Structures are given as C-alpha cells and as structure tokens.
Length: 254
Ligand SMILES: O=C1C[C@@](O)(C(=O)O)C[C@@H](O)[C@@H]1O
Image 1: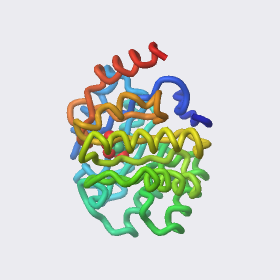
Image 2: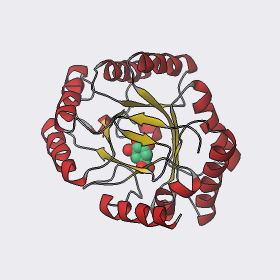
Image 3: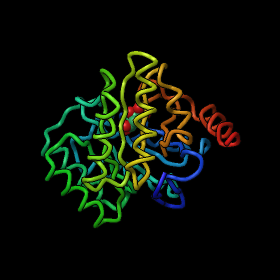
Image 4: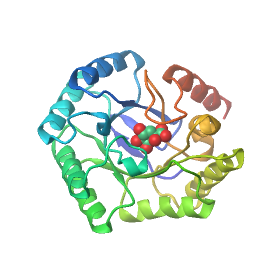
C-alpha cells in the first residue's frame, strides 16, 4: 500500500491495520458512558455515528457531544460520521442539512476525520473536502451497499473516484450474498492497492460471511477495521479484543 495518513500518532496505511470502534449511543449520557468504557479497550480510532444520536438535528447539541468525546478521549483520533438511511444509517436528513452538519463538525475543532458519502453532488463533496482540509481534518469518502456486492471493476472504480475527488481515505462496505462475493471484495481491495491507490483505503465485506475481510486487511490492503465495543454499528463487526488478537496473529505470520 502506498501512502500513509497520520492522525494524532496513529499511522494508517502501514503495518497492522488499525482498529476503529463506533460510538452508537442515542443520548449524551449514553455517549459519555460509551466513551468512558472505551478507555479500557484502547482502540486506535473512534467513530461517532451521529445518526444514532436523538438530537442530531440540533447542531449545538452535536458540537456539545463532540466536545465531550474529545475531553474524555483526547488522544484518540475521532471520526465524525452521519450515515444516511440510504447507505445503512439510522436516519435520513435533507442533503442541505447533511452538508451543514458535516461542515459544523469539521469547523468545531473536535474532529480529526470526517466521513462523507461518495454518492452526492460532486460540488458538495468537493466543497466539504476543501473545508475539512482548511481545518486540518482528513476525509473518508465512503460508499455502502447493504444489498449486495458490485463487480470487482465497479468497486475499484468507486474507490478510484473517491481518491480522484480528493478523499484522504477512500472506503467501501459491501454485503456478500455468497463466499464468492467476499472474494470479489478482497480481489478489488488488492487490485486497488496494488495498481491505483496512492493513499490508504478501507474496505469490508459485511455480515458473518464477510468477517474474514475485517481480519485480513494487512494482506489484501485495507488500513482500518471496525470492531464492536458493546453494540456493533454494522453487521459482522467482531469484539475488539478478539479482533486485535487475530490482527496480531496475522501480522506475526508475515
Ligand atoms: O462505514 C463504516 C463501516 C461499517 O459500515 C462497517 O461495516 O464496519 C461501520 C460504520 O460505522 C462505518 O461508518
């Protein structure tokens, strides 16, 4: 894999894949508790899935949560994500609000990485990337298919599009309908990282059948893997301690 991204002493794109744990609380007090509990798990990265938050339509409440997470976990890089319902998230908001919310998050000073969905108007995506970079925030450009697994060429083409738009971390999550679909995701990951990527990429095949893709990133070329604390944010996430021991086992074997 060529190219790395370093955020708060965590380097993505070299060595063992880094572990990210999502925060999925629906209230400020649940989120506080979850963040406190993460101290013991010591993930490399934390993602706040703000679409789970009951007050996500109130920007002041959102930045308030960000400030608290940052105070509880000041050393851990924080990803801000609003996952739209059409890509497997909990809520749908207007496109206008989606971009306003993400802009407020990157301008808050509490976020290290923002997740922006690829399937939006190009100028909106480019505008948000520019604002993020002006605020020293890295950008994941993501795409999720909860129904199936596109062809290898289509997966590679979406990852390349994310890279061309200027995303620092192209990402795709797909749903397998067969073991062959898991191989398609792994082959696309390997092809992307060997032939096209000049930066770290993040890929996963979801659900139980796809778990191997969350473990084998160091071999096939995915820099970050999502593990669950007490509640997964997507199907197939395994518990952090088990995830870490398998990643270390595979790392030692190489
Ligand atoms: O995009 C992703 C990946 C993910 O969907 C997964 O399958 O682990 C989990 C989400 O929280 C995250 O935003």
